[in-house]
Image 1 (cartoon, rainbow, N blue to C red):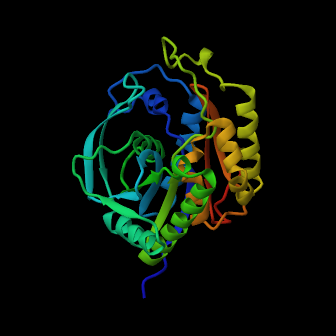
Image 2 (image 1 turned 90 degrees about the vertical axis):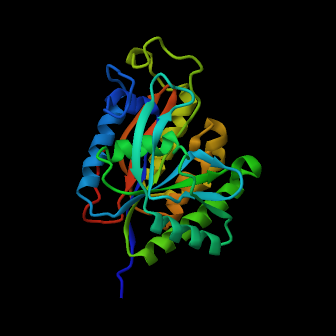
Length: 302
């Protein structure tokens, strides 16, 4: 009998293209003088942790692949193209070549379908993978040596309400967890988004000029710290409970449902999150954190 699959780590992995720009990887065409070190170094530390974990695939839920009918999954073994950020084409022109665990994606789609969620596999070879997926996956695993599964974010918050989003994203998380268990695979879950998301509407002449970088306003900061404090205390259910208000007050990217999906898939962890770094990018609040279900390897990072 095949051993049960499991979720070996859950990551909150924000995707500002600025972080890839600041790192100057060979895949990106823009050149920078650095910037946003607190987040980039936090990512490097989490990437080192991932290197020491035995896992088969990364499953990432992104708010920038927005679908209005159902939840979609990448459905071809390889996607290769150039990703250009629509708002920051000056920073992010990234040549990607990524592998997909289609078998796992299909199992998740089937489990979601059985749970009553409308689903679809993306099998268009010319489909351009969103920059949220590429940024988060690159920063967590710059070697790109693991296959991924990308899940779209159905726009329930916009169509209905944040409460409907919580219900739907939670159901999707539970379905994905069931599929992972049945697959026998060891999987890292990634929720790709920032926290507070009010941002500047003009760009500095030099984007990486850190003298101009700060949180949009103090109330955004206070909300972010409230969420982080609950995560430190292992109160993931309370985080979800206040999410509608948090999302409304801070225009947070949590409106896509990523964190709700991941917390539900992990059974709402009651242990402390590992905090790897918090910093503003163009006024938005970005937190790098992970949830390690293994008591022996869980760390108190920051």
